[in-house]
Length: 394
Ligand SMILES: *Cc1c(COP(=O)(O)O)cnc(C)c1O
Figure 1 (cartoon, rainbow, N blue to C red):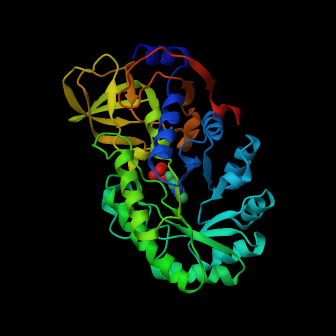
Figure 2 (spheres, rainbow, N blue to C red; figure 1 turned 135 degrees about the vertical axis):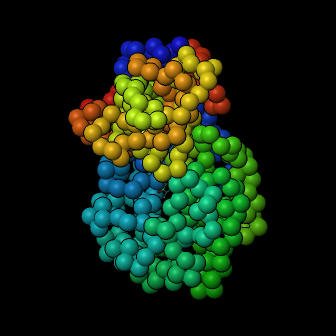
């Protein structure tokens, strides 16, 4: 932890330390384990230019959701054929912008979205997002209600796409982010196969399955490995869809989550009745947003790793009562002013959510190479490759 402590001292807190080496390992791990696999990194998880550049150079593709993300990638030299416009809720102007810049791959889950694409992106490839039932409980961050549609509706959309002059290429799904159960991927691929078969009867040959994101990272609960999930995907594709199928994966959390550690500091400790309150210099509005749903970070306090624990209310620094991360955090008893608090596995969906609420800066990002290891945050020789706070630049 010495290097992390040094980074906190030099750059101030809050700061997110990201290890590019871990991201590279995560990328290779997917490519090496899933057959016929194309990785489309879900840019929203962490869109920092250093991460985009690394994945660009590794040959990754990208799942983008808006004109802003597309512009950023284009400016970094990512070719349009490496992008999929995977948001099912796109502004008409953004679809046109994407098409005019060469993007030809779009996700849909409704008639109107198909009509919008046919209008301003004629002839494009489309894929239909299905939502599959019974998976909500296995994911810490479910996505099935807002997104996707039923299998029977998906069949209608595939046919409708054809009549609009679009080119339906496949289906997508998302089992929910931070999903703990590999069998959910099998179920979804089996359900998708119904659409593949029906489409064939109408002379439409689908050849792509987009398995979305959802692969978990290790916060507190045990997780299945990428190898285990890949095995299920490989088996299910072979059993239900056959050989000549392109398998797209869209990792967000699992690409960058374990590559980051958030360093924060205690700025106040107080007692309210029986409750011990600890306030940090980052909270719900400054990168630790996912604490308000089901994400439980592993949290440690520098130098107090062996101390007995107590229950704390853990809150952020802003003047908003929503800015409370956990009402039942277990932290070392003596944690107090000035202590450094680490949020482990915090590389995904943290800085992206950071606001400037109350005039308080969101965490800076410091990139290192080889400080953090995949499993444990063992400290090796640090090499700081870049320091940048995108927020203050933009
Ligand atoms: C957010 C998102 C992902 C990434 O999901 P993770 O669970 O973070 O891996 C993938 N695909 C789409 C369409 C998304 O919106």
